[in-house]
View 1 (cartoon, rainbow, N blue to C red):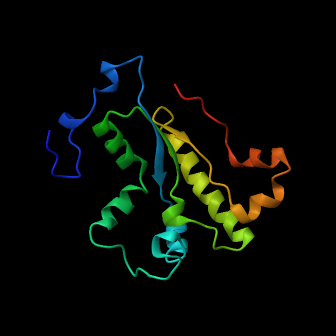
View 2: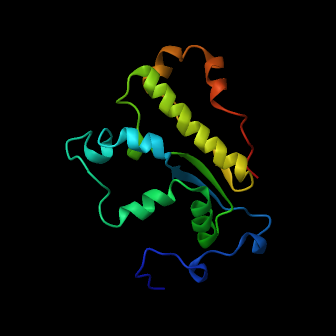
Length: 160
């Protein structure tokens, strides 16, 4: 089959979930963006060489992709087109990394990303499982306190 477009159509996808009820397809590598964190991180991440090649705006064609990464509904459209039942979603730290920030800002931005991820999971619990983003400059001093990570999750969810 020749694919000359990046758009996946349903006819190109794997069988629908109804056609394989005992074999869920799980994508363990899905990224989301939080608009506020993305804006705060612009030109401060690996994506722009940590500001070495600043981007005033996304390159042509990238804006739609970035906007799609901010909406769980568009991710579900992509999942359906590809025959994916569940996606494990987390923040795209390449595009909205927070390691540039002071510890408290890092913590606040990561918490916002995690809240966004949790919102996706709460809204679509049968389609998303969440993975937390930990703030490196905040978490390292707390590594010896196992209970300190419990605040990051509203509860872990078992995959089907």
